[in-house]
Image 1 (tube, rainbow, N blue to C red):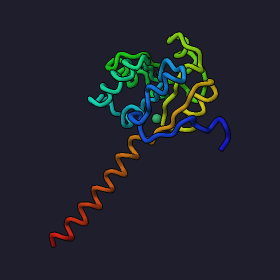
Image 2 (tube, rainbow, N blue to C red):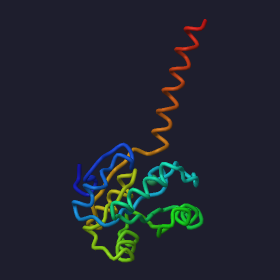
Image 3 (cartoon, helix red, strand yellow):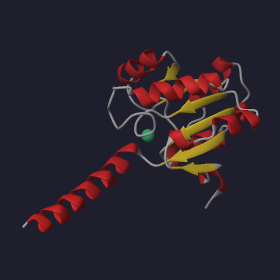
Length: 162
Ligand SMILES: [Mg+2]
């Protein structure tokens, strides 16, 4: 795999990231993708688990920012709810938005962790910017797999009832 496409870490979801180990790496902030990373695609509800995660993040001494290629109205709906800064229409994998956010957070690129579900936008963009990159499984895909599993279970159960 080309170096620019290679994430530093691969996990199933944001909740699996060890926040204290990020701090030990000298990281001061997380720049996260929105759709399918923080919330399911085009969803705006922020659930309790997400709020708790953000609380834990801040407790660990980390800031959060959002970088998204989606429209400003959509991005602001979530970022204002979470009380974090954001860049919409980021044109990832271009570096501009990543470096803009790092500057606003007062951090050098090497002190920033980028989390996203897409190699060609989030991971390449973060790597090109000199940041620590984490790839997560898209939320929608996880839901889809979950749904498939439930369907299978339903079929098995129905068969035993007949
Ligand atoms: Mg995404």
